[in-house]
Image (spheres, one colour):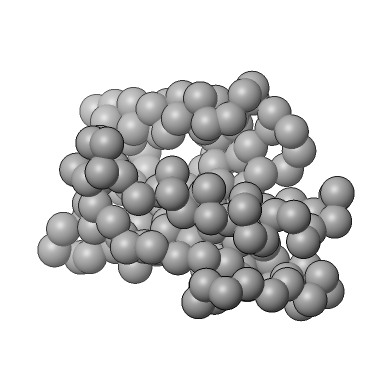
Amino acid sequence: MTPQKRASLSIKGLKIRTKSETEATNQGKICSLWKSFHDSISPQLQEDDQFYGVFFNNDPEQLDTFDVLAGVTSKDFDKNGIGVSEEISEVVLEEGNYLMFSAVGSLPQATLRAWQQVRRYFNEKDCPYERTYITDYEHYIAKGLTKLYISVKPK
């Protein structure tokens, strides 16, 4: 697997702060975040607009605490004149090297399987890369196709 250089990209949408341990329970916040996104922002998108799930602001002391933003490019957000009652946040996907993992199939199962693949890959003892935890993101390209981009550096 070879890292891809990805350009920076601004994303606007809805944001939450959560922990990995919370997401492993029925108290998880990510499902509610996506429900809010699909209820308020998604109906205002054009058919070919793509959306993103961005993982960022990892606590350096506890990498299991992070922010998640469900949104669209700032360009598409502004083009569509999206208006919602919730607070809108913006994050920049940092330019850098990313490993790409594909998720094919029904959501959210396909994306969950891809995240399992990510964990397995980085847990391999001979893995040549380490995660930087700067910005990792899910890019929802089309129905049944999602790509996960994980920020990395060589070990």
